Image (cartoon, rainbow, N blue to C red; front, side, top):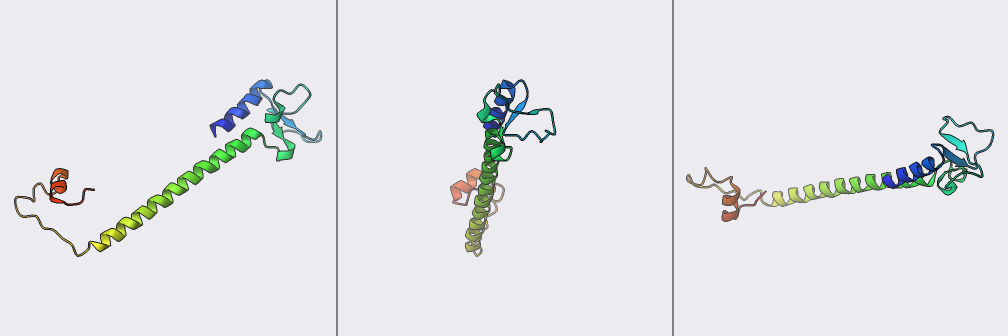
Length: 124
């Protein structure tokens, strides 16, 4: 996403704070003075908004691709985490009949990590 923002900033800075639009019909009036029709003096015209791309620029497309990539990574992590939780629940279901009762001198330390590791109890 940052690359897309930088491409848009680069072309806007190169054209004195205006985003040129290549192929903009003369009958179209921009909603904001930031956009102007491209001229022969336009710098970095290949990075400008293009009528052929639905008035998107290369930077806009990179920005969109970066956003989709971030959403995809987040969804993948969520799915992977939820599958891991399902697996751990299945493992715990197999241990339902297993119980352990520590004797009286173990009760005070039975929840410590050192005790659990020494006695073979699961560490979580």
